[in-house]
Image 1: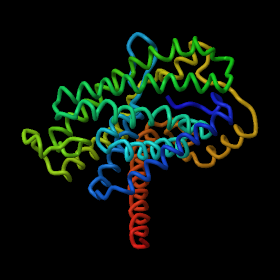
Image 2 (image 1 turned 90 degrees about the horizontal axis):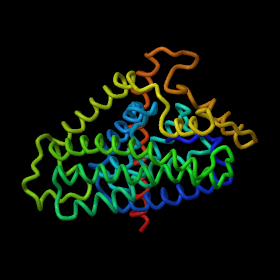
Image 3 (image 1 turned 90 degrees about the vertical axis):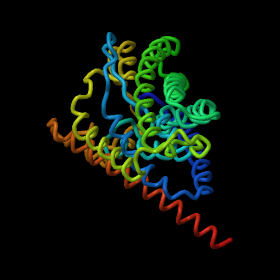
Length: 336
C-alpha cells in the first residue's frame, strides 16, 4: 500500500507529515517513560522480520492482484503501540530512502495508512480488549485476523481520502473506494493469518514477549525457549525470508497498484512540480538499491542482497534509536 508521490498534493503530504509527526513525538514521549532494556533486541529483530516479510507479495487468487504484510498489528502485539509505531516509521523510512519504495513526499501518508491504524487501533482497541482476561491461541488468532482486516480497511480508506483531498481527478472517490476496499479485505485476511502464526509461535516459545499479557497470572503459559533462543530463531527466519523467500514473491501488482490499473489503465500516476522533482532527486541519490535490486541490474542476487542488507539496516536503526532515547532519558534524570 505504498503510495507514490503523484497520488498526493504537497499540501496533503505536509498535513500527513504533521499528523505522523505528532503521533511519533507522542510515542517517543511514552517510550521515554518506560525502562525495559529487554525490548531493544526484540524491537530490532521484529522490525527486521517485518521488513523482510513486506518483500514477499502473496497472490490473491482469482484477482490478478497481490498483497504483502503491513506489520503494524504484528509489531504492536509484541512491542506495544508506541514502540511498534516507531519501528514502523523506521521500516518505511528505510524502504523509501534506500530502496525507493513509496514516495518521499508521500511518506507521511504511508506511515499513517500502514502503521497508525495497526499500531494504535489494532493494539489498544482489539488486542488489548481480547487479551484483558487472559491469552490463548484462539484469542490470538481472533485478534490477529480482526485487527489486520479492520485496520487495513482503515488504511485503504485513508488512501482514497488522501487522493480525494488532493483532487486527483483520475481517481473518482466512490469508484476508487469501491475497488480498494474489497481487495484489501482479502489482503487483510491473509495478513491476519500470517500475524496469527507468528504470534502463536511467540506465545508457545516465550509468552512474555507478547504485549499486555501477564504471564504470572496465567501459569499455563510456559516458555519453551529462552528469550535469546527465541530471538535467534526469529533472526534466522528473517534472513531466510529476506534472502531466499523474497525471490518467490508474486509478480502481480499489489492491492493499490491493481486498483490504480483497474481505474486508470496504469499502475502509476504522473505529477509535475518543484516538490515532486525535488523529492524524486533526493530518492535517486539515496536509493542505493532501487526496487530492491542493484542499479541497472535485474539479477536475483540483488533481491537477496537487498533483503538481507535491508533487514540489518532496520536492526541498526531500531537499536540506535532506542539507545538514543535511553541516553536522553538518563540526561533528563541527571538534570532533574
